[in-house]
Image 1 (cartoon, rainbow, N blue to C red):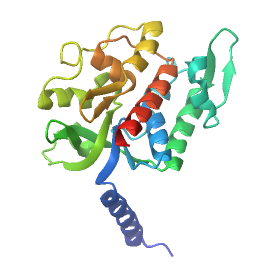
Image 2: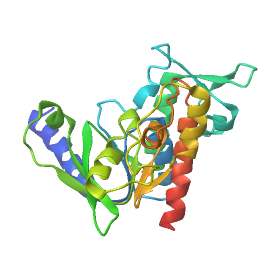
Image 3: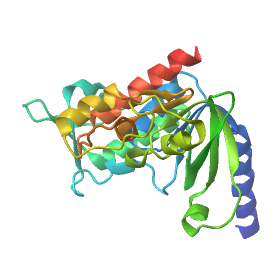
Image 4: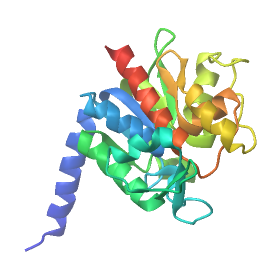
Length: 256
């Protein structure tokens, strides 16, 4: 016999228990795109307590749609190991490019992060940061629906040793950090803003630009290029994966 009230109780009991367990973590990652998912898997596999916060209902960022909704992505040989590590099938085109199914990529990136121990909260938005002694010490969160409807509902906070901004083109965590914390580690101290599409440069700089842009705050993926003023790169995702890997290794070295 199924009791509707018991169903409600089971959902709330489990979620409240898990929520309380994640109020203080090693790393909060805002944005569950390919860079964020890669970083989450590597960090969690290394034994770190990782909370991945995605403002949309479905994690995966821009990878789901491939190129113009053709469910295929392109990667370079340098990043192929990050697909191989989690069993994503890729096709060698013979001229320095590999292709992969975008839906398979997202499904396995997400599953591998969860299997490694990362916790994913969807439909939650990071709307602000906490700063203590000139260092990011956590994030301020609210339900995405609250933000979309502009309801006056006060948020809650999650403490973290490191925060990773993987929010893509918006670089929303770095943007709010700049307003609250002062200058970022960028040429002007501001969020420079992304440039027009140029895959060759964008794929290189997205890895180069991945790094700590304020104490305790790391930018990855398209957020890194948006913060540093580099081009976007379209449906080629090798740089995104390598950016997540680089960020995870950076944070691991800092946490040691």
